[in-house]
Length: 327
Image (cartoon, rainbow, N blue to C red; front, side, top):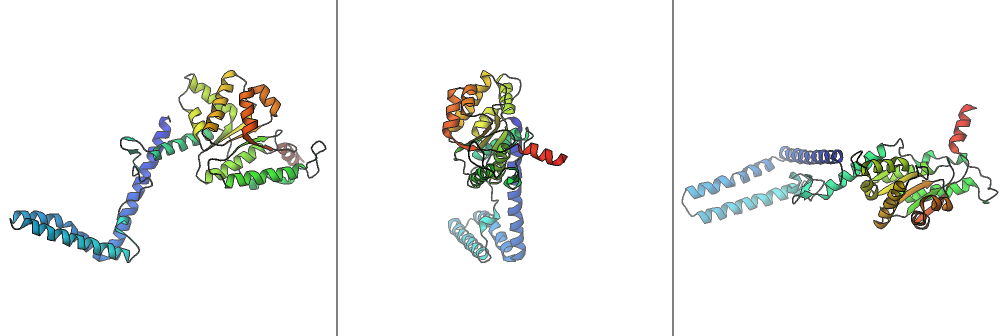
């Protein structure tokens, strides 16, 4: 499902995890041996058990009796070691590597099959690769200033853009902080330059910091990549990654080149994520009528009927900042 680069990166990560776990265990073991000399003595006595058993067999004496005595001595040493470590807030299990994945012990494979941890890492690296292809980067809510939104009520809606955007920002902040992978999908709608992209990328920043996989970028770029893979012009599994990530952010929906292939691919992505109960964030300049005219009822009804709508309003912030810089 995932490309070779994602696999190699995932395996390198697992190798590093396994190496770190082994090194930490060895370092702790040596620390206890140095701080508690009796630990070293006990381990040396336990290591001699096998030699004692062999010697008992060679002596042709009462082998069973001698073996039982050796086993009892060994058990007593194990108990002493356990109690000694316990008195110092440790346990014998601390001498063993504590792997991140208990299933495969950070090897990437269990019972001859790829482990879930390997699948998860490959998915994360594939998501990162897709997002890094765009010039977009996660932002923060703190960087979105309300000073660029008018406090005067709009003559058509009766709502002041500043008050409207304050509510939208608060909603998006709460959405990001409480994200659990099974949240509602969001439809950020409004004219160019009023903060739709900034808000979605601020959500991405918080969700990423919580350890979830996020793919974000312009829809044109993602659909073009799917098209190239579909017709064999490049390798990859972009559609699978877009459907499988924890959060997908499609920016500027409606600005991409119009084609039947793109429309079909978009439907597969949206419907696939809805079926998997995975949230998607869409930003667009299009209203409901324009969405229907461009994509048809199947896509438009899913977006407008199953996504939570958030209306962004005001004047183009980028233009306002540009004007200020020129004054």
